[in-house]
Length: 227
Ligand SMILES: C[S@@+](CC[C@H](N)C(=O)[O-])C[C@H]1O[C@@H](n2cnc3c(N)ncnc32)[C@H](O)[C@@H]1O
Image (cartoon, rainbow, N blue to C red; front, side):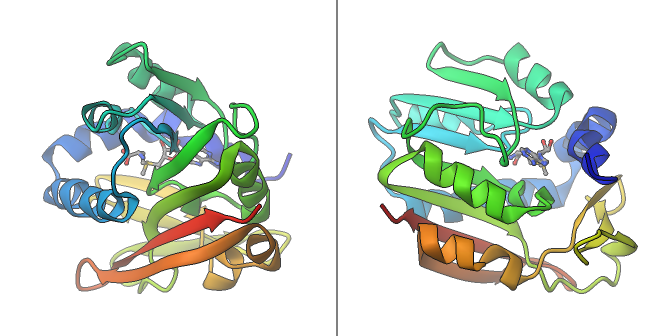
């Protein structure tokens, strides 16, 4: 267990404040519409597909997927609290919420057609473990589309350095939704996302950088599983 393991459960502590801030924050509303639209546009039709909602949080996207006519939604999140909230709002028997991490996804091999993830992958300290797991659960030719804060976001007004892991990755504290909640995560660089392990398992299809505010931007990435 690393000294930063505790960060995987931090939404157990900040989850309630995060969800409350999300309801009133203009940034959250903008993110909800803009970011979702970007990912769904790249994904195309979801009809009949088994979706993996990776880092599903409170499960706010499940209903969108059901409306799109998916076969089912396999959703996971590392925080017990967030999964509990998601299960309380269980929208259909077609949706399964489980507690689990990107590094150990709680679903079987080759069980999903497409994995979608909103603002969760940037919490993962060892992305190579996540790439291996995503490759394992995707069916042949399956795709993964995700959105994360841009790795080179300006720290000004957004985050503060907290420490460095044994592997030299900076840990920063982000001021989320204008300071309503402070959340720690690794400060990943593009070389962490697009590692040799990534290149051996996936093909990069889409790479979009979108400026979101004076200091911040987002990265939207679409990849396809190599068989
Ligand atoms: C900013 S929230 C986004 C939640 C949801 N996707 C949404 O857009 O509302 C980030 C989520 O990632 C989860 N998370 C953090 N590290 C994770 C990991 N290693 N594996 C799975 N989920 C993780 C957190 O518990 C949290 O619920």
